[in-house]
Image 1 (cartoon, one colour):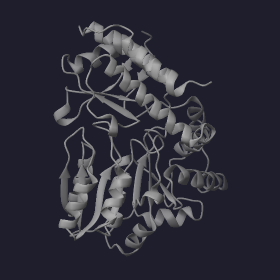
Image 2 (cartoon, helix red, strand yellow):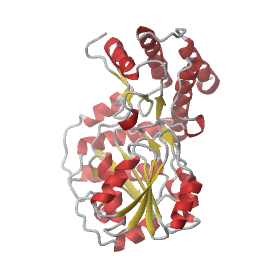
Image 3 (cartoon, rainbow, N blue to C red):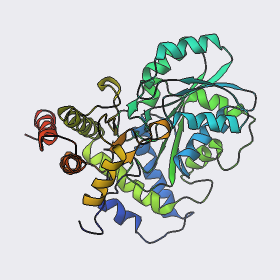
Image 4 (cartoon, one colour):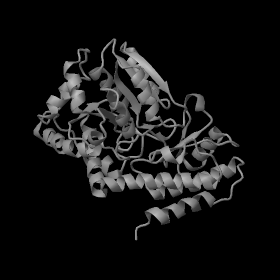
Amino acid sequence: MLQDQQILRIPGPSPIPPSVQRAMSQPMIGHRGQETSQMIKSIGPRLKKVFGTSQEVAMITGSGTAGLETAVVNIVQPGDEVLVIVTGAFGERFTKICEAYNIKTHQLDVEWGQALNPANVKQFVQNHPEIKAVFSTYCETSTGILNPIKELAEAVREVSDALIVIDGVSCVGGVETKMDEWGIDLMVTGSQKAFMLPAGLTFVAASERAWNVIETNEQPRFYLDLKKYRDNLLKDTTPFTPALSLLFGLEQVLQLIEDEGLEQVYARHQLMMNMTRAAFKALDIPLLTSDAFASPTVTAVQPDDFDAEAFRKVIKQQFGLTIAGGQQHLSGKIFRIGHMGYCSPADILQTLGAMEIGLKMIGKEIELGKGVAAAQQIYLKEGAIV
C-alpha cells in the first residue's frame, strides 16, 4: 500500500474533486469587494436549482449542525410544541437542539433501519394540534435510509399548519430535492457530503410559509438570524465574514453539477447504490435497510457471521480504504459505505474488489469476484454508455 494513498468511502466528509481543490487554492480576495459580490450573485440561482426552490438559499459559515440550529431558532421559541421524527442518530440531534432552547419536544421513534411512516406522523400530529413544526431527516446517515419527505409533507398538511423542517445534510445534491413542489418549509444541508467540499458551510432555505413565521418569531438570535442572510443575499453579500475559499470551491462544484446535469447526478448516485446493494446480496451478506427506502448516498451493511470492526480494520490496513462503522447501539454491528459526491461506478468497483479480499482475510467464506460481478451486471444494465 502507498503510504499517502487513502480511499475515502465514508458518508462524509467525501472526496474533493481536483478542480475544486484548485479553485479553493485561489489567492484571497476582499470579502466586501466587487469580486465577492459577483461570486455570490453567480452562486445564488444555481444553488436554488439544487434545492428545487425559488427562495434565497442562505450560505452560513458553520457545520451542518449550525444549519439545524438555524432552522430551530428561526421558527420556534420557548414553550412552542414540536415533533421530531427519529429514524437514527441524526434525527436525535434535532431533539437535543430543541430541548436546549426549551422547546416542548415530542419524539416519534422509528426502528433504526426503517423509514418513517407518513400515516403514523399524521395521526400523531392530529392528536397534538398545538405542534408548530415537524422535524425529520431526509437521508438518515446512521442507517442508510431515505425518508419519504414528500409524502410526509403531504400527510402533515392534510391535518395541520405545522412547518416541515428537513435535515438534508447527507443527501441534498445527490438525490432529487424539490423543496417548493413537495411543500418543504425549511431545508438544510452541508458542504462536506454530496456538495464535494470540506466541512465549513451550511445552506438553509425557507418557504414563504416559513418566512411568515420567521418574521414574527421573537426567539433571540444573532449569527444564525435568517433574516440577516436573506437581506444581505438580496444585495449580493453576506452579513458576516464568509468562508471565501469554500465559496470559490462551491462555485466550481455547481459548475461540475451543471456540466453533468442534475438528473444525471441523481442517476449516478442511484446506480452506485444499486451496484453496492447487488454486490452484498450476491455475497449473502445482509443489508440493514430495504430496497424501498435505501439511500443513494450511503449503504449500511449488517453482517451476521463476521466482525464488522475487524473487517473495517483489515481493509484500512491493506488498502487504505476507510468505511464507516455503526453508531450508538449499532456500533460494531454494521458498517457503512459512502457513495456520494465525487464518486463514480469505477470507484465502487474498486471498493468492492478490495472489500472482497478483506472478507477473505478475516475468514468469511465467499467466492471472490461474485460481488463485483453482480455490480458489473448492474452497471451494464443501468449505467453503460452506449
